[in-house]
Image 1 (cartoon, helix red, strand yellow):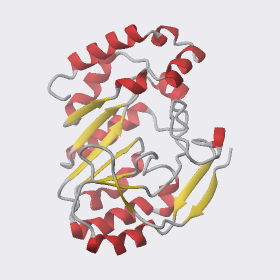
Image 2: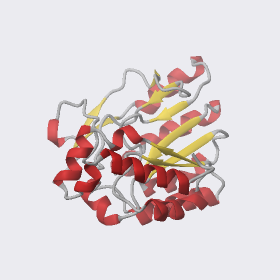
Image 3: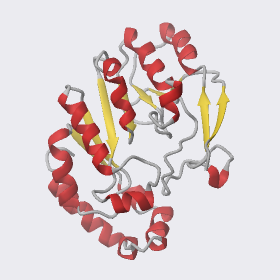
Length: 244
């Protein structure tokens, strides 16, 4: 299915954040085409097409940001609150890159999360930010599971390589496990622990009604048992001691 690109104009770029430890949210895109079936972010009005065939692109985001920065109080900026800032459209439009370039002279601390290898294109800009944390979302160790739940996102091995590449050039890295999908927790921990500075695990999304329904629909019935998921979570935490 072809992706529908809808270009929209941003009235503002930096928005006050409600997330603890984050002062501003900057959203270059208002939709995401990673196609993650568990995603509960759908404010676009496109229904089932969200995450599959619609992308809302804030074409003027970087220009608006440049106007706002001189008068903005310095604070932590999270780039993209509900869409992957390095989804496929970024390869053409470079809105995330342009926004980061605008942030460099002001040295606002930046954090972002992605599943895409496209972020490696921007290592030159990332390296100019003195306070930066890049999170790679890795929800399972199994690409079979990834294909079922995240059909359009990059393979797990690719995400591990992204993490390794960023870590090797000295960029502060984080692994975000959100949600905890069917996995071997010890194997996942072994894959990521050498290349990350910390790990974030979101349990609530792992047992949301939508995720539990998907487990049953896709044949992972054991994972629809909250007690089973809690046990896996404990094994995961044990395997990642010192990083959580």
